[in-house]
Image (cartoon, rainbow, N blue to C red; front, side, top):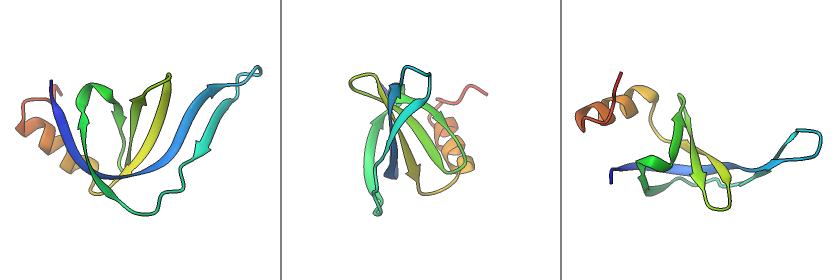
Length: 84
C-alpha cells in the first residue's frame, strides 16, 4: 500500500445527485491546513491546488493542498508512483 503526505484543508463534500441529476454537495468550511497521510488509492485526481478523495459512504471530498501540481508530480515520480 502506498501513501502520500500533504497539508490539506477540506473544501467540499460531494454527497451524490438529486432526482434531476444535479450534484449534491456541502461546503466543509475549513480554514486551517492540517497534515494528513493519505492512502494513494483513495486519491481520484490532483489539480493545481486541490485533490479529489474517495471517502466512505460513496462520497467524494475536495481538499485544497499546500504546494502545487509540479511538487506533487515530483514526489510521486521520486517514489516511482508517477506513470507519465
